[in-house]
Image (cartoon, rainbow, N blue to C red; front, side):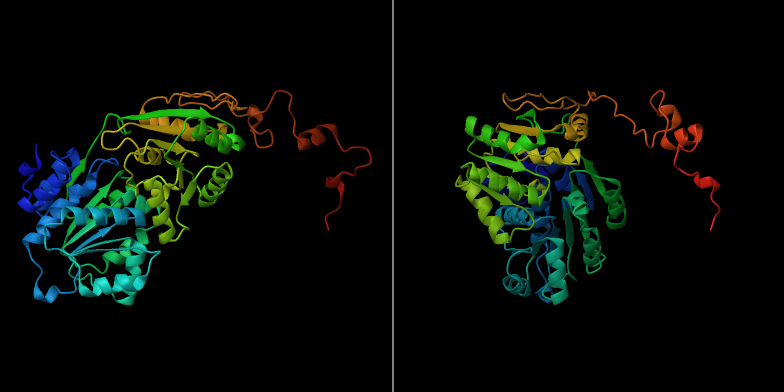
Length: 433
């Protein structure tokens, strides 16, 4: 199938062709026709499958076919909500790219940057607004944005917004929208909470679920290096130097851990920077730009970047710490091996991360190769999805009698059997006061 067969206009086809795309991805071929018809849609597909173009192209065509009315001068006509600043900027760039030949105005608003320039752009009126929930609520409170004329609402990466605690904010935003509108929900996963939201939000929607035999991106070579936790930073420096990595995206679980690791790499003479939620938007933008240009060799990030970064030619992704949720592993390593390229996903795993590793291998349906780096052999073995740990010893303090070691007796049992010790009065014989 070609894009011409999907019913897109000549100007949109021209923009798609300028990007070098000839054939739609599965999610695009299934999503574009019902959106063009005005149907509500719920779509699930993994990262890197072309979801953004899947809703952007038909959304732009529908707005272009029904021009803005004079009384809609300040109204936002299409609202796209995303969980992170980086993803908002990325989606906005896609809207501008595909709409370059259309007379539609766009804007993006998120926190960490000046409020006034955003307010001025919104007061002039925009057709398509891309925003994060928190900053949009700020504009609603200051009355610098009018959502009463929204014709299309898009929730992008809905599961991530749920994970980040945005559900109450989304409900407050929904209360400001007109009831008659088209609703599109795109997500990499569809947990129970998202399905419940979809039931309240969508009106007899079309449903798309793109299944893949393997949840990981093709072209990604995966390996696990077992290592003790206190040796992880040294092992990472060793790998970067010995393998001459020129561009590596490293994931940690916490912001403090990201800062600490970055300082360690810098002390080892490795050009590194950090990107996470406590950084100002200016600092995050500069760090990402330096990394893309090759000025920075390593970018250390929390999972805020897992679904919001689009980096061309990223050869290495490193899981310095495994994520708590197995699906986040897929989103992390999906940053590499994009556009048909090859990439490496390296995980530094200590013994107490065996549970997370087992969950990831279960999700993938296969075991990940484990290679011990010489000089960094761990003191405890890392278990895989088939087990490998000895059964944890039951605490004798809380164990049931039939779970205790043979011959074990608690202190109270010994006292009861042996009677009061010499020099110790029997408390039970004391009169109660």
